[in-house]
Length: 166
Image 1 (cartoon, rainbow, N blue to C red):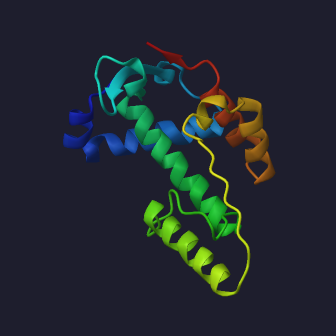
Image 2 (cartoon, rainbow, N blue to C red):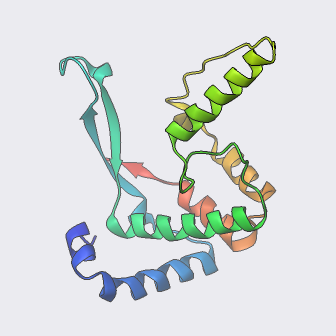
């Protein structure tokens, strides 16, 4: 593992080898098992530190893995944009959008409908643990449906399987 301090200090020296590793990883549809290890630490959220429900688990991954994930995210995001696969309603992970822009858009929608005399129904869902429940097969199926195929899809499969937490 390369520490994040070394990566930041030597970013120009490590960027080319890490990009090369990422390209080889994608080309062969593999992801190193060494980078699948995450260290889990508890992070206090609120209130009493004596209650376990006031903590959430944070998985710390290697610097190399973080960089590779960012490279892949950039490429996938470009694919989604170029193929118009992102909803106009998408606010997360979009530059210039945030939870605030989502709330403003929702508020404007509510006000417009009330002014037009429409009846509105609201449903609130707690999706805070939603990502813990996602099936790898479902994720891979969704990726396939948006045009992610061949070795890149194999890469995602390799990335998802066999992950470990300590």
